[in-house]
Length: 158
Image 1 (tube, helix red, strand yellow):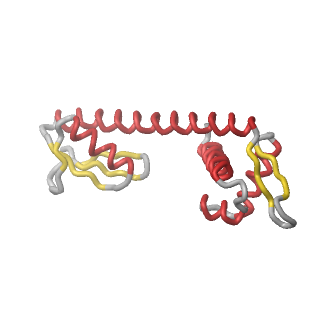
Image 2 (cartoon, helix red, strand yellow):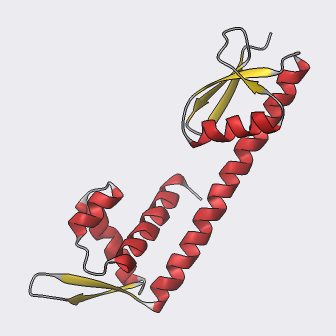
Image 3 (cartoon, rainbow, N blue to C red):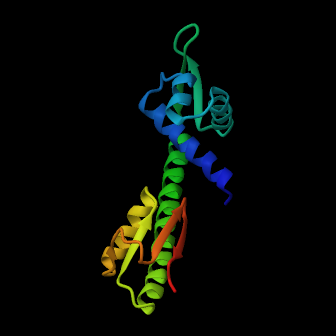
């Protein structure tokens, strides 16, 4: 699955969740909540309508109401499960990379590491190191995990 289709599915899931919580929400508000352009929301809504996942009715003269169909509820459930499975896959892959690098760190005679980076990947690295008995320090002469998005690079082993 490509990153683009993953992003589209994530947006569709978010749209379905937002519509479910507020059927009277407008496209401008949806765009703000998702951090995308109104045209992107419109395109996704048209796709969801074509799939039979969402129906549109007029609430007032210029106001639309979005209704999630049973097909839409099933799609939301499937997209949610796919999202969780992808998230756990990323989590497992990061843990494996960190554990493999911990083996290299130990073979080089170290029991501590420095981590450069923030966010969820850094948190997973920290937890894995702690679990494996590797101390996290801020010392220059120790191996270092350099995090860039989902990429993890180990430096400082001689």
